[in-house]
Length: 318
Image (cartoon, rainbow, N blue to C red; front, side, top):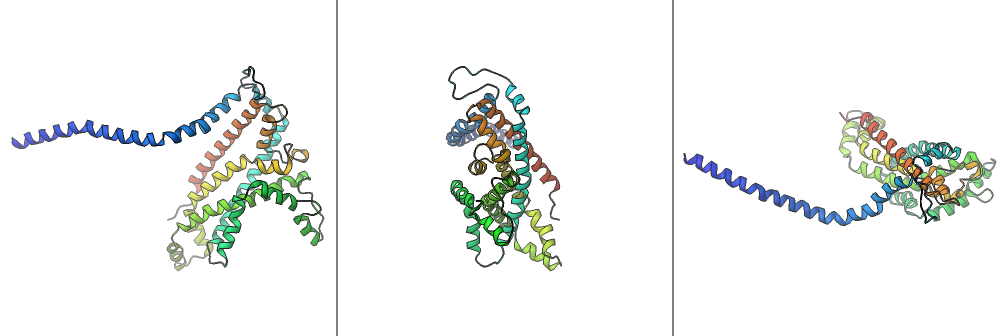
């Protein structure tokens, strides 16, 4: 009987403490969100609101030079883009750039990361040499590469001259404009991907490779069944970031070729086409916003597809 009374008293005390525990939990959570509130406000003002507003502008015949009424046109801006041959050419150029540059950067950065993690001489120097282009201002690097691409005094044509080969108009020939930009952007952004892969390789225990070698595995088998599966999360990150940057590529094309994209618009990407529409002489901000929405949808679709395929086909460590 006394035990039943004690149990009922304990239950009543626990039930009385529940509201206090909930209040403390809500108070702690509220304090955490209060500390995060400035970051949420900044993100909302400078990131989330502009992103939503871009979609709104894409539905208007918007001109930022016109301070009067901006008429609502619905999907007319999108219909204009889908009927514009320049848009389809820019889309084709962008997709071709993504298809070539992203795998190239992935393979080269992975190979360089493995090499820089090995016991080569001067590793600190080579790491700095590979990463320094990424942190160097793009205006400075493009100025140097413009000279390297020069038809008469450039480094690349100088090498071709030594090899008794014909010079190439790197930034003037429509067939060589896009490959030239791919070479530059790969060199410029390679260091960041190398650092990501090096961080992934650092987290892999060397005992796994040693155990595989003891079992008779060669270097390729060790990489295939040990290193590559464990690098899958880093590979997904590199793919996503490089794909997003490739779709947004604007500055190298603009600095090398100008707003027109070079001869026959061979270097006009979606980013360059957006700039010419939104900030050109006509200042069609609504059309430029529609291009931004299309770029977002492309990046979102490709990123989701990459993430899904990587989870489905990434080999696992048994």
